[in-house]
Image 1 (cartoon, rainbow, N blue to C red):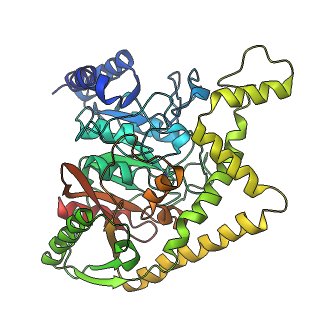
Image 2 (cartoon, helix red, strand yellow):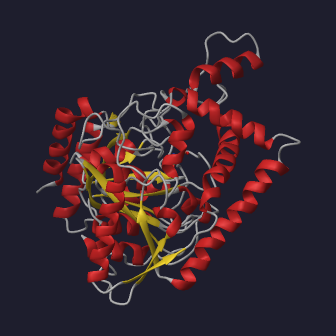
Length: 452
Ligand code: GLN
């Protein structure tokens, strides 16, 4: 195939199917075809990059020069970034062709993609179900075969949970593995970009392209990027798998549990040893996250003030009126809720009781994982407690927050995690989550690959 043919096929599929799915916010057909032609020329000249001509999609949280980066918000509906995110630059240098920007929960706040200014995304397996969130557009686009792979971001589960709901593979790398430069900030100490694709092998290819130290992100880590593809063929013989008992308790859908336990049996049959472990502070992960993430969000989102970029209200009477009306009009309900929570917990008199306490709990949660990894190589469990739920089914915010029970602690600890397709509950996919120590992505990808 030429890259032009590949990209044309992707664009045609988007044209036919995405009216219904709504997985893209922006499709950049002309620019993509021009870049595809450039990739074809580079290939003819014998200097093609490792991803030459591959059509990809980016969650609309990654800045793309001259192309709208909306973050799923009315606030940034007319914002075109003046520069590319580091990961976007790296993908381009490898020869990949960006086809467009995918739908997402506004500012990555959500677990169902129902919080987007551009409307909800539908799950390609069942159009009455959500695709998960917040990277729901990326997950649905890959699952529907619109593009072979996409990038997402994960602050509390937003790569892994939509990957699980859409029956694909999604990897959240270690915090610091992938540059956050040019990735719109939600909760900076938790956010991490990563790949969503059909297989772990495809995720490996993407991760080795986007990972690495970046002088423009002081939290990115200067550590050699392994050849993840070369390390996919690991042996499972003697691999120690821990099953956190807290991840198989109340609230876990029985069909999800069955699919996950079946997958773990396959690992046992391939020579792995399974034992139970405990992550005793699991019940504190959601409360700690919903103090820390909104606190960071309230600070990060203070930049949307109607002055420098994004939405601005009409005819402000003075500066205060400009701020108030711009933010009242530009942000959706969930984003406003988080800003209010964050502003409250950071305010004088509440800081010690909430923010400081949550940071102490975060430390305990991290220690739970470090202790578990003294005993076992990887942890396994369900990615989410239920399969994809129906659009409109989760009515109150707290029941939505509880969706992230198995994914959120991973971000608080900074470790990597992957969701691997593990079967079905009815007609809806189930994800197996695999967790490993900091910077053990090669092991995670290898373990996932052996199952595929
Ligand atoms: N669902 C979680 C939230 O709403 C996590 C989102 C994410 O990982 N970006 O904050």
